[in-house]
Image (cartoon, rainbow, N blue to C red):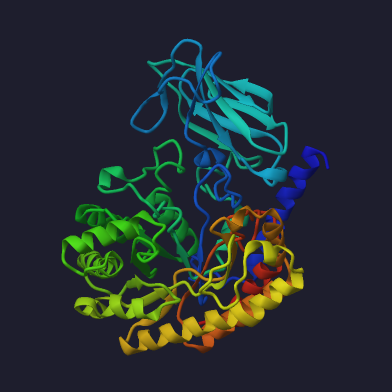
Length: 524
């Protein structure tokens, strides 16, 4: 298919998809405002990156990679340190040097083709790699990507007295509307199906470097991939859709950050929307810096002799402190859902977190991630009864993999849900899922087995996976679970997992369709 034809197809697909999804949405009120979805489901969004296949923004420069410094005659990426302004824009270039960034690093041409428009302020020379320039005028360049992969924006020359800034790269067809509506219509249509959007990955929560309010991402910063998506954008999206936000407070954030954050949400979020608040993400998972940090802090405060136990208790301690700030700013708890999260597989951890210093009295929900798990290591774990490894599973048929999910993974996740519901009931809090869905992935070197990866990816595209999602969500409902946050919306399948319900923004899968059907058939 030629580029222009594919561009037209992509545009028509987006409009068609939007109309289909809108038919399943709650109606609009007489005043034109979207009524908040009466959905039992939440959604985690894909993190900001140049390889993001969700394509939430019509300005693809919002997901540009960090600036790469280049010097003539030197290896790629080995140019001198760049002089940047406070918002990350290139102020000055040394002789024979240039700065470039990657956009739309997406395989197979799964992004709109056609004529993109680059708008900018400043003086110098901008060019595009892997693209054909169509026209150029002051502050505006029209170009067409030439291939099916990434393209480059290069600053060859910039005037230090009037350096380039406010660069935008607008998808075909959105130049006239991008100021009033920065969101892709297919993204809005998908997101509108869900009650709550969890912004964990948009806030770059895992290993966050944010400590003070000055560290936060702002709308003026040149990309969202370095500091995260600005709070202003997250609030605007929720207001536009009428969905609830779920914010994850950075693990090292000080009280002033929490207070300023809460004040902005209180001021700008539409009345009637509920705010979910959580301290960081998975303060039990040892792969994350926030877990190690919490363990260190808990040991210092004498919360336990073992770092993991001290960390669980510190996360409860800090959660309650942060909840108190939100309550003070909001003048009560009516619009808040205060979440303390735990490991689904070990309900004992939930007991430890909720009971520590009566934390349950200051929270509203226990959060878990009860995945349908099939984690396959490179070498079998002697402690496991199945003794499965990547080499063994890679020789299975697709039906064998799906049988394992049906007979082992799904029942196991249901037991986790039931066990944690008992804990939630004991402490009189709701049970919510901060993440949920399938968890088929190679681990401990197993991810490097290519045949295994192909098999797990195929399982995620199989109609039976859609059936598993339906049974899984039925079990969540029947156990009395409250909000169930799917992980995640759209993301390319790889050896690191097939987390997205969809792999690309213009994609479709049985598991995505199953979630939409269940959502429509099971209103609150």
